[in-house]
Image 1 (cartoon, rainbow, N blue to C red):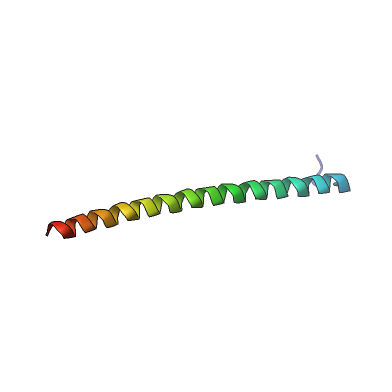
Image 2: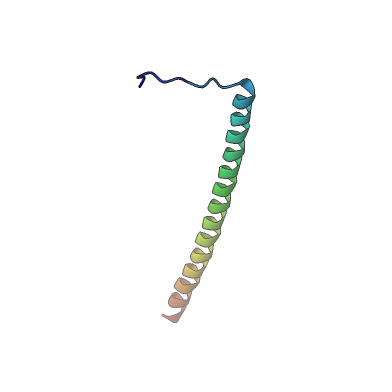
Length: 62
């Protein structure tokens, strides 16, 4: 057994393909993150509105 590792040289075409795949993955990740953030913010605003309505109702009852 040899203790050295042989590296496979990457052709320019493979390098370009990897670059394009990384870019596509980055776009996909950012889109998913934006979608998650939008859903989180919408839910937070909904809960805030419910809380404010509940507090206003409690204040009106006093």
